[in-house]
Amino acid sequence: MSDEFPRYLFKEMDAADPLAELRDRFVIPDEDLIYLDGNSLGRLPAATPDHLARLVREGWGDQLVRGWPTWIEWARRIGDRLAAHALGARPGEVVISDSTSVNLYKLAAAALDAAGDRRTILVDAEDFPTDRYILQGLAEARGLTLRALPSDLDQGLDLAALRAALDSDVALVVLSAVSYRCGALLDLAAVNAAAREVGAYVLWDLSHAAGSVPVELTASGADLAVGCTYKYLNCGPGAPAFLYVRRELQERLRQPIWGWFGQRDQFAMGPGYDPVPHLDRFQVGTPPVLGMAALDPALDVLAEAGIDRVREKGRRLGEAIVSLADAWLTPYGFTVASPRDPDRRGSHVSLHHPEALRISRALATEGRVVGDYRAPDRLRLGPAPLYTRFVDVWDALDRLRDIAERRSYERLPGEPSRVT
Image (cartoon, rainbow, N blue to C red; front, top):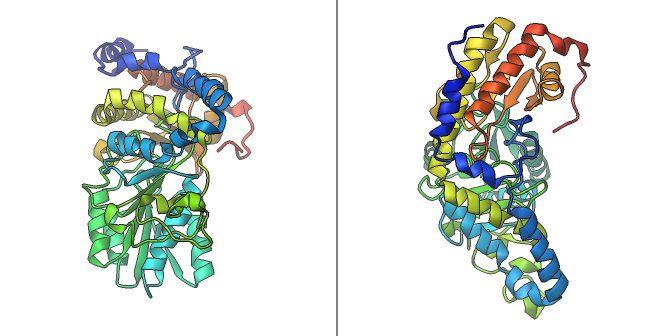
């Protein structure tokens, strides 16, 4: 079969890739397995196992509790590194804390408390389920109105629809910078400005953006943000999350979970809660030291790459998926289910097919390509610029084309997957 896109051109792109050598900084035990699910769980940085082992042996094993004077500062120290290399935030605005869901609850509740008598929360109807569930719970407990804005499955939320919904009763807007399903990328600065015009807070979920696109929280005028570290940041399954609070808001907002790590003079063990006037008031309890430790070697790689170069390669990988899908997969019933404009898309691309669930399973087992499935009928492909090659994209789409042509997926069951 003659192709418009010969494989050797993709190998040439890899040879010219300024980030190509960083692939060696990750554990890749099986070169034949193509991993396109970095937007769910990133690969293991090669330096992480020894880094964690040293902490366990020398820190926990040798120092015991004597290590606490060092560890107790890690949530802020690593937060500052994350702010500098991935989030475009100032020192003292990002802290490592809890899970994304818990952080979203804390910051949403704090913003609602500060919003006075405003009664409305706005959310994308197609946003990640946990975000919507948390907001449903807050709205029900407080007697507020939760408005879910209609959103296109393949194009994301329309900014005009958001602007039309903003009024003086809106207390809080909660949105994902990059849509988990289709990869649609929102304009943070435009959203923040629109919400500010009516006096509403904006809380961003950066889980699919951090480490893949430049976020620029300070420059965009962001108020609040949360996100995970186990996707494009490569910090491992269940790694602790982060939260961001703009410096000017920190003393004004008080989060709902009052813990001793947010307390002024915490080791005085005082009888009443008196929160510190800075970012630490958004911490709660003892930080997960072993989990946090994985962030340092992962951020070393990201810092070396530079988020702008990561973004540029991510755009090109996504464009390669779209071009190959158009050329090879359209005859087999596939359509691109993400924004085609790379400026409106994060680093993953979704493809629609009525048999996407079974195709995703065949691709993983028969094709040895790990992507993932998202309802309804979307095959999601997430190349991670730090370790995904251009030839990986070519090979993955070629294997997908072969499965579609032979219809080998028809042998597989079609019940919903339990894999998240």
